[in-house]
Image 1 (cartoon, helix red, strand yellow):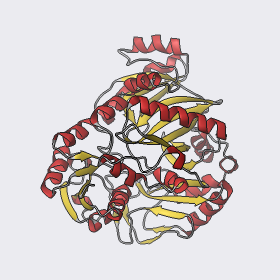
Image 2 (tube, rainbow, N blue to C red; image 1 turned 45 degrees about the horizontal axis):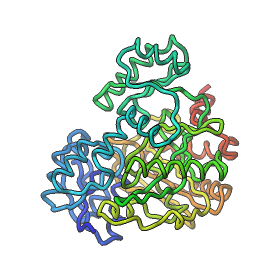
Image 3 (cartoon, rainbow, N blue to C red; image 1 turned 120 degrees about the vertical axis):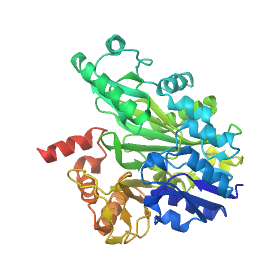
Image 4 (cartoon, helix red, strand yellow; image 1 turned 90 degrees about the vertical axis):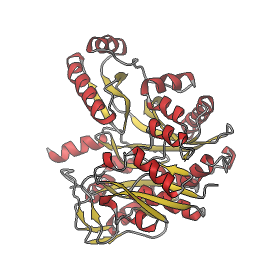
Length: 447
């Protein structure tokens, strides 16, 4: 087992990883920007190294600085968390070349699944259902040809994309030039490559993802599904498991298909296969080769510490569980709390004047916020995750309402009022929503 792990991230996920390491008897190294010198994960880690100024490109995306910090402190592994360099194959390869363990898949696996066109081909070959789509597009004329084959509406997607960036919809032929140019520009800005491709656009799908764990010995388990359909601008807002949209037969079938596909691909560590689900059919979107923001709801219903398993797998250990060992209990829901105006979504950095997190049975809050903490303006605005677990969905909703009512964050605007509005909506209570539902609700609120 590793003796010291460098955490190449910030915020609640850095603290989450630190806690798992501490429970495993592993020392931690926190890297941080100048802006994050007083962050909670920095305060709690065994060692801390400043890797640059506030700007992410000069600190949390600074590969040489992070590698140097690992070498200087004698860390034998690096956990990338999510975001930043977590799916950067070049970074994973640099870590490997320096003889340091990367807690995630290999750089080759990451490179394969990070190329969305190559990932589609690999998924199809492995037996996953894939939506009609194109190879990488060479020109707008090429896009017209493929759009006609696929049939409108289509969505233009960044080849190296993720997180909802580099995606534009063309509902009809006249929309294609603008969608094509905007998607390429956004892809270039976010991923340094403007390569794009087309997929069939589904009108009212759910966003369903399957969590897997795989070791280096061919053992693969699935940990069920998560429904991530409550989204705004392709960014997830609320997630739950199990999905209200799936019956037990559909659930078991897709999980079985995914498990077999992962074995064929030869993937290792934690990963998530993401699908769109419409009219009883699944369509592969992408694979996330990292820990997901919403992983706590899977931990809630299975009792399995995903970060701990990631670390064990990367150290060369076999999976702690077989598929028959996995038992699912109850229902879990996660709400992402952002430091944003709940109506305009303008970021609201600033000093936390008062902080009171809800508690009680089945309530978990992942956050590194504390009273007096100053939220920086230069990073993602998510400041907390509220995770609720109960024996069934109705119980989870009641507990979620109570927990949101208890949550006190003073000094900055937060999206807690929006979350309260969402969970009071009849469609959410009934579980009859799709990936466009929240934006439709927000449009009605503004009209």
